[in-house]
Amino acid sequence: MVRINENYTKLQGAYLFSEIAKRRTQFALDNPGAQIISLGIGDVTQPLSQPVIEAMQEAVIEMGDAKSFKGYGPEQGYDFLREMIAKNDYHARGVRIDTDEIFISDGSKCDTGNFQEILHIDNVVAITDPVYPVYVDTNVMAGRTDEFDSSIGRYKGIQYLDCTEQSGFKPNLPQERVDVIYLCSPNNPTGIAFSHEELKTWVDYAKENKSLILFDAAYEAFIKESEIPHSIYEIEGAKEVAVEFRSFSKTAGFTGTRCAFVVVPKQLNAFDSKGNPYSLNAFWNRRHTTKFNGVSYVIQRAAAAVYTEEGRTQVNKTINYYMENAALIRTSLELLGFKVFGGVNAPYIWLKCPGNMGSWEFFNKLLNEAHLVTTPGVGFGNNGEGYVRLTAFGSRENTEKAMERLRKVGL
Ligand code: PLP
Image: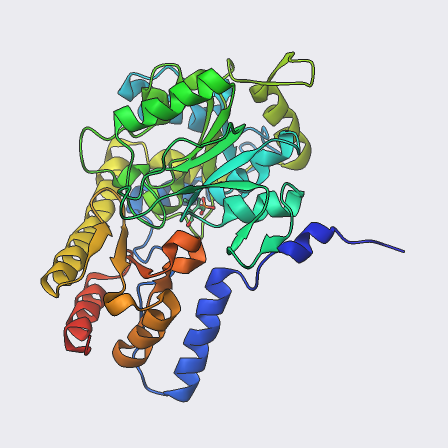
């Protein structure tokens, strides 16, 4: 008798975005002709930039010529891309990262989900609440938790780090010692980013406790305030305690094209039961080369074009476009008297529901009365209850229309 991984039975309901899609579809069926605007799912809308397209086209032509055709590439990624990343994302910020510390992949969703696999099942994991749901669910799937406790809306076995309005949506250090800490900055969904001092507190904690920080910087490119660190490695000593995840998805419009990377420094260790150190770089290399066969050459060439002068100019233009949307959403909502957070260093605006409304209640109200799709904050964790997330990834026209409609909704 084949048995299933029963940990999957602990998972809660449908994945957040499937539920949103279901409600949206039902609303569209019930209200034919309604012009629904989505500021919900965090997907980009602007096309790939011209330098990226041209690099992709050239690479396609190379693939059609026997002399330049490429079969399997290095699983860790081509050196041309790893070198570009090391130079532009790290050396330019005074951070020394070697190319063999960079692993190219097809997405940060897979990377942040997969990384826990090389860590012991008994590790105590701390996850901020609210946050990108993949961290929690993949630890549940792995069996690192007990059943979901519906009385508290949380899994036993995970240490949740509360991020509330009172704490500025930033977590305090854990009460009890933890082994693995997921941090996301700028944060999805709150849009809040850690300062240098705050990140240093976490790096110091990890050093003191021999813990590991899994640092998700998928929205690094949207940071506008100059004092906010773009990489955890800007903090001294972080290479001994942190893995960093980055993605071209939001930075350069690669959500449908797929390219990302993980940085695993060579001096980063995890330990066996006797306290002997093992290189996480070597372990991740072993895992990656065994289970992954590399991102396609064409896509890696496209990603490398992001770092050319013209590529950078174009990509920055698009990021600025989204961040202007973010400013528009922020100021419009503030003028309407809403309490809003984020939207300064991230393309997400975290909106407090008015009148003590719950997340789904406010989601339904906005869908019904403004034909506007948002993301209920509770989908990102208990502390998200009472909030919705708006994204700045829409077109300018739709963002303006959405704000206009909000002005007319009776709130
Ligand atoms: N990490 C965070 C915090 C995200 O919000 C997302 C996507 O929404 C991802 C990772 C996934 O990125 P990718 O498209 O590279 O899989």
